[in-house]
Length: 73
Image 1: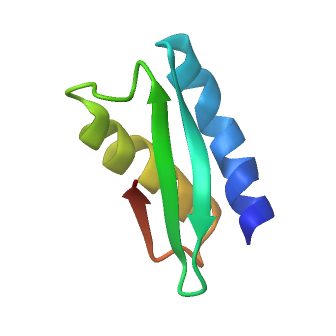
Image 2 (image 1 turned 90 degrees about the horizontal axis):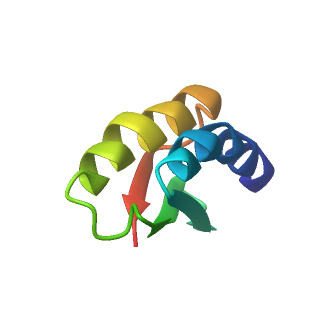
């Protein structure tokens, strides 16, 4: 599943990088929780929570249905 998550993150990265940010995969747990770290301009941005939920989580869950949640660490 980790490979599928990385592939999905690669689809999201260009949009984040266009704004000076990025996302790093930290862990995929056995129960389907994906832990990511927003980096660059995304780290500390007031819109980071919205980016995580509306962008990263939605895309990952659509691309990899086995995912149960996405968390920022």
